[in-house]
Amino acid sequence: MEGETVMHTGGCHCKSVRWKVVAPSSVVVWDCNCSICYMRDNSNFTVPADKFELLGDSAKFLTTYTFGTHTAKHTFCKICGITSFYYPRSNPDGVAVTISCVDNGTMKINEIKNFDGKNWERSYNETGIASRSKVQK
Image 1 (cartoon, rainbow, N blue to C red):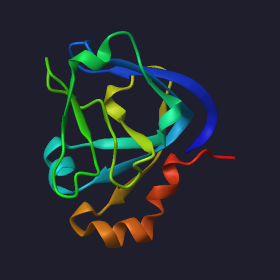
Image 2: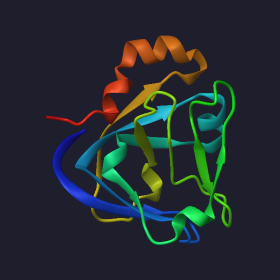
Image 3: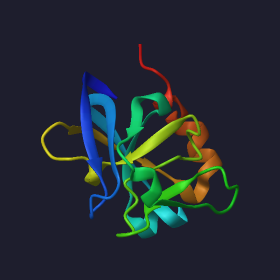
C-alpha cells in the first residue's frame, strides 16, 4: 500500500454492515482466481486487523462461510449477501476489504496484482501477499 493514510468507510449494499478502515489513499488491489473469489469476482486490499473496525450493530448482520482449510473467514451480510470484507487465509492477522464496497471519494487504486488462488501455495510464496497485513513503516 502506498500514499497518505486516511480513514475510509464502506459496507454492504443494504447498509446493515458498515465499517471504517485506516489505509493509504492509494492501494494495491489483489484479484484472486481461487474458487470463491473467482465466483464472487472479488478484488480487495488487505490491512492489519487493528486498522479495521465494524461500526454500530453491524456484527449482528454478519454470517461466516469457511471451506477447505477453514483458515479464511468469508463474512457476508445476512440481509443482502454482500461480502464487503473477510479474513483471508493469506493474511489471518489482517482484513481483506472489497474495493467496490469502499465509499466513493477517498481511495484510488495504485496497482492491480493477480493472486493465483488455484495454485495457492505457490502464489502465496511468490507474491509476498502475507506482508500486506503488516504495519507499513
